[in-house]
Amino acid sequence: MPDISQTPRTLWIGRAASALVVIALLLDGASQFLAPASIATMMQETGFDMALTPALGSIMLGCAILYALPATRFLGAILVTGFLGGAICAHFRLGEIGSAPQIASLLLGALTWGGLYLRDPRLHPLLPLTR
Image (cartoon, rainbow, N blue to C red; front, side, top):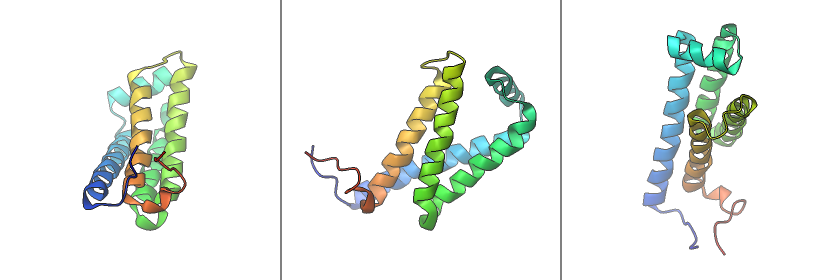
């Protein structure tokens, strides 16, 4: 596999991937505050109390902001990954292995680190994608 060097193309692909993560988290976090019927149904299905929606929304919004800010992007990526891992585990607990929310969380986690990897070469020595 060739070395992924910092080029304008990889930088913009990384920015686009990271922007998708931020947008998804901001939308999901905002929906937690609005608590439409679809969120209420999902909260009940996963066994979470509706009273937790403001806390979950705040966590998502906080993670999105930390990930979006250049100075805190690594902390944000770690927290986003942890949050998404919890979402995946909640669906495992329900026996929903391979469900749409699990796949979405997994893909969002991959986009989180993939986008960061493509836009910040400091990750390359930690996660070498070369032979």
